[in-house]
Length: 245
Picture 1 (cartoon, rainbow, N blue to C red):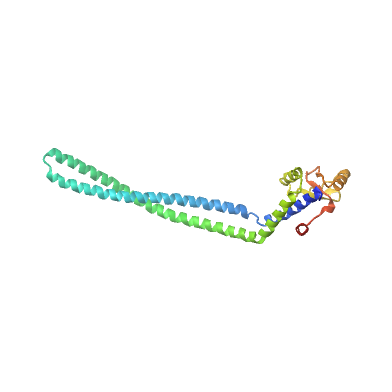
Picture 2: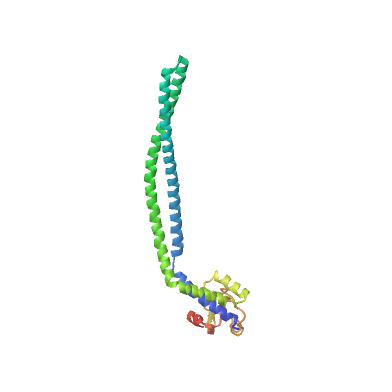
C-alpha cells in the first residue's frame, strides 16, 4: 500500500495541471455567463413588447368590429325614426342614436390612438429585436471560443478528473478534508520541502519537523506559517509519471 503523502502528492500534481488547463479559459466562462444573462434580458424585453403589440392589435381588430356594429345599429334606428307613432318614441330613438354616435366617436378616437401606439411599438420592437440578435451573436462567439478550447483540452481534463477521483479513494477522509480545506486558501495546498524551507511561503522549518515529515509518510504535517501540507523533497512527481504509472 502506498503512503498517504504519496497519494496527496499525486492529487496535488494533478490539481496543478488542472489549474493550468482551466486557467487557459481565462475569463471566458464568466464572460459567457454575462453574455447569456444579457441575451436573456434582451429576449425578455422583446417578448414583453411583442405581447403588448399583440394586445394592441387584438384591441384594434375588436374595435373595428364594434364600430361596424354601432354604425349598423345607428342606421337601423334612423330608419325607425320615420316609423314612430309619437314624439316620445321619436325622442327615445334620437337619444339612443346620439348615444351610439358618442360611443362611435369615443371608440374611433381610441382606435386612432391605438394605431399611433402600434406604429411606435412596432418601431421599438424592431430595435429591440436587433439588440437581441446582436446579444445572441455575442453569446455564440464566446461559446464558440469556449468550445474550441474545450475541444483541445476536454480529453485531458476528463482523464485527469477521473484519475484524481480514483486516487482520492485511497486517501483517508480526514486527510482529504484537510487538503480540500487548504486548497480554498492556497491553490498549491501541498508543497515540497526545499532547502529546509516550505516552498509555499519560503519560511524556514524546524529540523525536527523535517525529520518527522520524511520519516512518517502516513501522517500529514503542516507548515506552521502558511498551513500548507509539507511533502518530502524526494516526492516530486510529474503529471506524465502519474498517468503512465
